Amino acid sequence: MHQYLQYLMKRIVALILPLLLLPAFLLSGCGSFAAPLPDLNGTEPVPDITLPTPDGNMISLSDYQGEVLFLNFWGTYCPPCVAELPDLQEVYEELQGEDFVIIGLNVEEKPEKVRAFAEEHGLTFPIIISPDATVNSLYQLKHMPTTWFIDRNGILRGKIEGQMSKSMVLKMAHKLLSETP
Image 1 (spheres, one colour):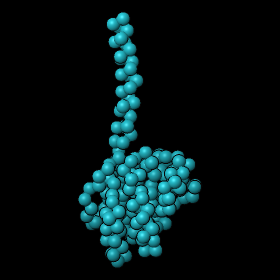
Image 2 (cartoon, rainbow, N blue to C red; image 1 turned 60 degrees about the vertical axis):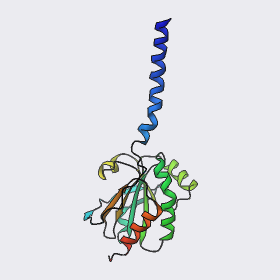
Image 3 (tube, one colour; image 1 turned 90 degrees about the vertical axis):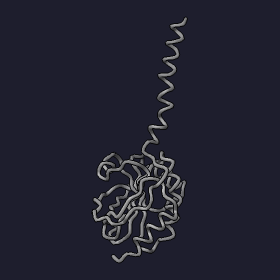
Image 4 (tube, one colour; image 1 turned 90 degrees about the horizontal axis):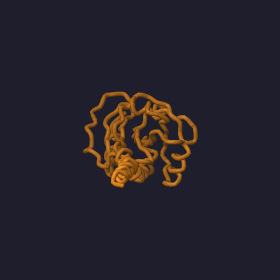
């Protein structure tokens, strides 16, 4: 009987332990706190990519040459990503018509799920989807959310890993918009 109890306990631990560790594994790439605002002295051109929207249209980053572009890497499975999306949407709406765009780059989720999520949360800024890990390695993505600040010339001027507040997003946008192209 004693051996049976030991066997049973081992089986229970073997079944429950992975379930307890799963949330930590899934959230390990999600950062909830953003670093201080970055120095905007970058000179590195951002590699151009062309990816599908949830509706199957294609968007290239080069389509937005001449505009200040914030590229936000996110996923529906990342709580800090989801928490910052309403602020990004508000900034996108406030700065429409000012040569400014936010593009949400969803990482490795199904288009149907992303489309439904965007509709449910009222997201109107452009969203593109990376269907595999290619973009992660191309852009050396380590944490989500991550936002890249790209100037009108397609130069990466800075990035923040972690959730940003609306005031941080606005401050970065106004700083880059105030520069002459």
